[in-house]
Image (tube, rainbow, N blue to C red):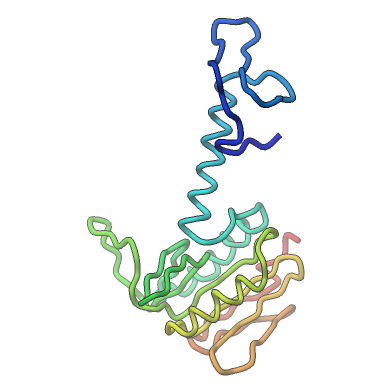
Length: 198
């Protein structure tokens, strides 16, 4: 059973001293739940809600997280000219979005000073489609980012093992084999290296 905040109305208290800790509620429960498990479930659900609200997208799945790490490694090969970032929030005029990855021209990092939101558009953003995410929602985000000045947006689709590249007015390019070459940065990514584990 998946616990939802405020879905259960507690009328009494947790019987911590009882050999069989139970939750007294006005709603039927499938079985007794120890208070530690109940609170852990409540906190986990709240954390997920906060993550989704802040980033305006669902939690990353196993495949999503793996591909994000692999693509980051590929982008780091170009760090002499470009600086890649993961989960960096962009605040460009009215656009507030957190792409999975983005690439800026080479930046000098200062760990004594930090930036919470970037107000300049990156050269590239990368969005990895999650299983619970609507493709139309992702397309809307991509169009918004292009309108805000992002030069190139990549859409990674794990199920089809493809990457589609959007560059403004030009028609999108979908690559399923071989090498994807970004025309804005000349960054090249071999799809065999991205999807080899699949």
